[in-house]
Length: 280
Image 1 (cartoon, helix red, strand yellow):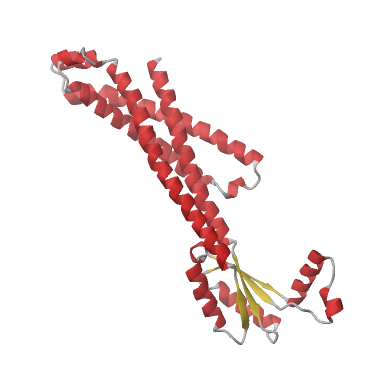
Image 2: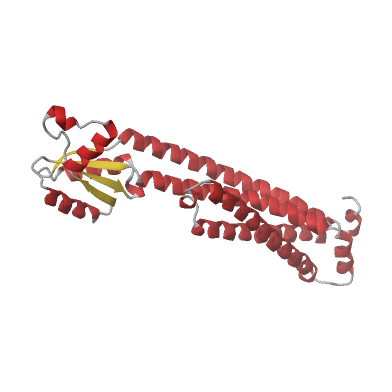
């Protein structure tokens, strides 16, 4: 019964660790998704032909900061805006007021204020093709600031959670070792080495950690499956790679913490004399 209680308590702690790992990875993926969907609009000059615009877009696509570049002609821009507004602005203006553009999505690492200024300056050097470069600098800075703050908060919570989890598992393991403190002393009296005495406890701790980790992974898998089922697009935030990493982290902590706590607890009782065992 005591072993079952230890296994269940360890599993619950590992579930909390797994949820934190999933949260950190989800935040990282959402951060990359948001940054990669920030758009830089490159407005082309009136004299630039469609062929020149497409060729220039292909050249931009080869740049290290460009994730995706799409050419939008004047006619397409007019058609899309007419559908959005419900009227054709060229009918009362007499001309197409839109210009051809290149919609460029950036690699996540380049979606920050300094990189955007550098990219805009580089694009404006092609003054024969480019008339203006537009991007939402304030939005980019706010997104990066918020994501950095969230990452810091999650990091601090992860550290605190690991400390709390260690304390909880340590207490549970210590109680299980405490129940056999007299067995430990008896083995000492018959001349058993410390390593020989520790071995059964470490093996049991390894088994408890393994079973608890498997149960925790099953519980986390059920939660993720429910999220996939009820939230469309959740698989873009957490994929197979993230789930495997979470499983590996849960397994590592399940084995490492239980083994470490058992080793420390057994050593504590091995150092005690017979009279001290009755005082605790």
